Length: 318
Ligand SMILES: Cc1cc2nc3c(=O)[nH]c(=O)nc-3n(C[C@H](O)[C@H](O)[C@H](O)COP(=O)(O)O)c2cc1C
Image (cartoon, rainbow, N blue to C red):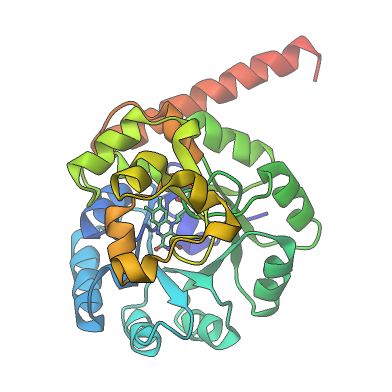
């Protein structure tokens, strides 16, 4: 159990603001790192590799020696035609943290290690975790049931316990963490870092349109639909946004009634732009905050949870 030194340096809250398609840009990354948490964005949020390099320059130019490290997310899949170019740019800019999704590839891990970078990989089950471990990743992001974006369906305790038995690297827990108490609970269960997506959509620095933030604040866990009908991979979406797009949430959950999004929206980017993703943690998100205020609140909640837990343990002489 450990956090690589290059990431624990300047870390003042043990969590990562997760990369989110169409939502995370330089603004959220810079504000998060300045608040002492690791900020990240998907390289594909910029339309071109040149644009990606410009964002890296902007972020590196804005961060000082006191700020926490930042990271980027690379989608490792044969449909990502920019991957090789983006890896080259990542290496040139010596990005401290690279989060790989879908494929875990040794060559990419080696390229990031060549300049001292760290690689974390997204997984939803032990089989994927073993494959990523073979590729030599430094950490695993355990995307459990209820997470925003592409999510798994395993309970976080089951996932952490199973993977800890064979993996000694960094473990990040992803899924429905909306409060500092949730992050504390993840650490108690054996994670090294929390990984929060949905909570950061409701920040002033997120690139989410107003209607998205409002819907998220009004929603609770019952308003989340888990379906593979939108992008071919199971993900969680805000049910009211499916309805607003003329889609039937009941049909979206039924494997026999696949919605042909290619027909209706003709590209995945367009789908995620109009059909909004969020995790089950929406129920405890009640307002939009600047990232700095959110991180201060997370720290206070973490500390309160820790104190309450210590008092409870004392009751049982534990
Ligand atoms: C709108 C949205 C977009 C996302 N896009 C990506 C992405 O491009 N790459 C990625 O690795 N994860 C993506 N995720 C998943 C997050 O990185 C993270 O695993 C998840 O949000 C954590 O669960 P939570 O939302 O319940 O906090 C996305 C999540 C959301 C909500």
